[in-house]
Image (cartoon, rainbow, N blue to C red; front, side):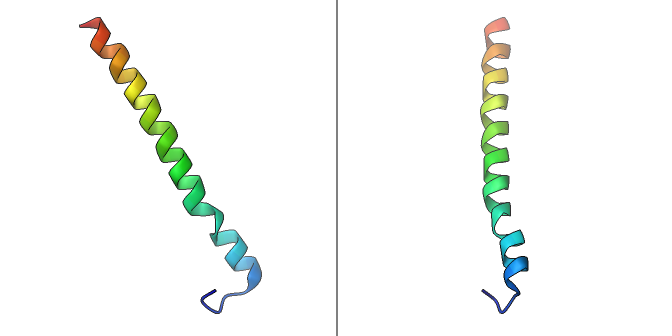
Length: 41
Protein backbone atom coordinates (compact mmCIF):
# COMPACT_ATOMS: atom_id res chain seq x y z
CA UNK A 1 0.00 0.00 0.00
CA UNK A 2 1.70 3.18 -1.23
CA UNK A 3 5.05 1.43 -0.75
CA UNK A 4 4.88 1.98 3.04
CA UNK A 5 6.19 -0.41 5.68
CA UNK A 6 3.58 -2.84 7.00
CA UNK A 7 3.63 -1.28 10.50
CA UNK A 8 2.86 2.18 9.11
CA UNK A 9 -0.02 0.83 7.04
CA UNK A 10 -1.48 -0.91 10.11
CA UNK A 11 -1.27 2.34 12.08
CA UNK A 12 -3.02 4.31 9.32
CA UNK A 13 -5.84 1.87 8.52
CA UNK A 14 -8.00 2.16 11.68
CA UNK A 15 -8.27 5.97 11.66
CA UNK A 16 -11.15 6.33 9.15
CA UNK A 17 -13.18 3.81 11.16
CA UNK A 18 -12.44 5.69 14.40
CA UNK A 19 -13.43 9.07 12.90
CA UNK A 20 -16.66 7.74 11.37
CA UNK A 21 -17.60 6.11 14.69
CA UNK A 22 -16.92 9.34 16.58
CA UNK A 23 -18.94 11.34 14.06
CA UNK A 24 -21.92 8.99 14.35
CA UNK A 25 -21.83 9.05 18.15
CA UNK A 26 -21.70 12.85 18.18
CA UNK A 27 -24.48 13.10 15.57
CA UNK A 28 -26.88 10.90 17.52
CA UNK A 29 -25.99 12.58 20.82
CA UNK A 30 -26.60 16.05 19.35
CA UNK A 31 -29.85 14.89 17.72
CA UNK A 32 -31.10 13.48 21.02
CA UNK A 33 -30.18 16.69 22.87
CA UNK A 34 -31.97 18.70 20.17
CA UNK A 35 -35.16 16.63 20.60
CA UNK A 36 -35.00 17.12 24.36
CA UNK A 37 -34.52 20.86 23.83
CA UNK A 38 -37.48 21.01 21.43
CA UNK A 39 -39.74 19.32 24.01
CA UNK A 40 -39.01 22.12 26.50
CA UNK A 41 -40.31 24.85 24.21
